[in-house]
Length: 513
Ligand code: ME8
Image (cartoon, helix red, strand yellow):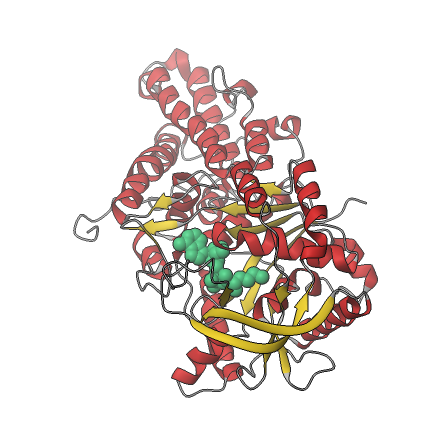
């Protein structure tokens, strides 16, 4: 039996509502998860929330609430957005779940037994918004190197995890693997970082300073550092140290999708934590870039967050998904602008896909009583001239983590189908009684083309692809294992096709700012 495809998102802090950046990560993961299900794999897709630490404690206090009460109120904001965006996750984990806490404590006890934890004094500079301690050398003009805000000097008794002991091993591991850190430029970045000696990681906070965290086992005075706690979700979510059989079924994770901001935590701390407890490495840590606005990263603390709910209301969920997946190559940064979203909407979705459906459905209504006529299926229409089978191309691009090119390959088929209409001119064939058969073949094959395209689009634009398939009286759940299977005809002559509303109605000029 093959192992299920296990994909994770970061656990998002609950100190503010999710924005376009969080939506992006989850849409990427959802698309990969749906793709794997489409090709017949079992999938376990996990997302969730990071609820401990200073940031959350402070946000709760600002509202006069207990942190858990505050987190309980924020979690539905995330779940609501995931539902709106069609994110089909299998499990939602919260770091306040009791199972997660148990696993974190099990890991810590194990690390203590192995001699990888020691008690020491920590002096550092702490940035509250970033939840990060910095050394003097790391500070930029005395300020936090990430957010450039004021930092506080602190010295306290804490527990430390021996990262340094594993530095050599980690460098060799990363160097030897072409898949562990993707894309390649991020691998080089991490190797660059590892050229300097690694400092051991302070993994607790004194309770007198911060009580909102998981109890450190065996100490009344400490709680676990939020990052150490949160990373463990990837194994606690599949019951590490609790249910061996379940853990073995899912682990190792296939993809940890993260933003490049948190790559170091996932490509340095996390593998060392796993190595220290003797757990296999995840297959790939995949770091995507940032969405920026006016040159700065979109972030809740900078207050330039774009509300995904508003964008979906205006353009539709699939247009939003399409834009994020298509506009930027996974790994690179992207400048967000609503104008670009509107442009993509009009050119790719309304003019290409929406128009193709409209034309095919309208011609079927006009020339064949709204029914799929009897036709001679020509599978080569799927491989537009000089193109490979679009299923094969999509598979290859998805395997190399490139959904933008996968979408482009699918869109090419749509463009070619629109061109085919211009070339074949069904309206002229319809005027000539001797061309009846030819007309039926052209229309039947165009309908096949859009049916196949819709199956391929299911992971990317689930709502729209589902709509087209339903209008063609086809199922919306598919398993397509290879290109041969993909090439089979999908339609039956005689079925009635519903034209339906425009898939992507023209944008109201006033609505688009
Ligand atoms: O870092 N562009 O949580 P977080 C693209 N709790 N993606 C973005 C983005 C942007 N402008 N802004 C945020 C944390 N993201 C920790 C993670 S994991 C064990 C703990 C996305 O709420 C991106 O995935 O700050 C980034 O890595 C993540 O949100 C950070 O979310």
